[in-house]
Length: 168
Image (tube, rainbow, N blue to C red; front, side, top):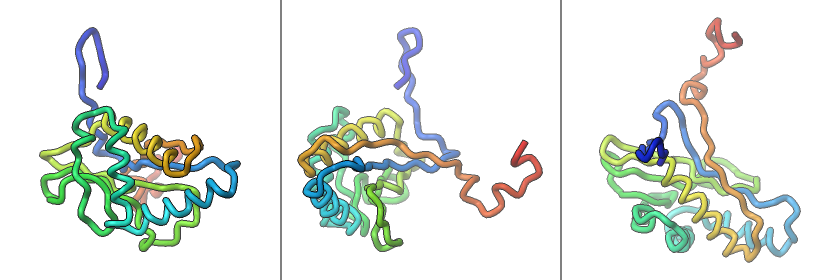
């Protein structure tokens, strides 16, 4: 929420961008912490049922009531949000089935709003805080950081750089 002269404005996610929540473990962690991270990463990316405990823990750290009460998403990837794709906002874990993710990140990649339920930047910020606290709890170290990733929807098309003014 943005305050301007005692007024609050809700900032909904931009429709022009694809959003994701990205969590990364520090490069210099001891092997035992990295081993815990790898188990956690596998659980998150394996999908429904395997990552529900992460969502449950995350909700205990949320500050916003609407995030605390968000249901677990009953989908292959798992995540949070209502189960009706046409009316409920959702957020899904990146799936290990889509490709091999041999990296140090856990990603909530599919952040979807609908015409009746829209994500706000305030909610994403609260989820970053809560997920970071949860992931640090599970690896038993303060070594996980989080951020909101954004990319322009048009940059995902094959001809994004084909226009004459692409490099102006």
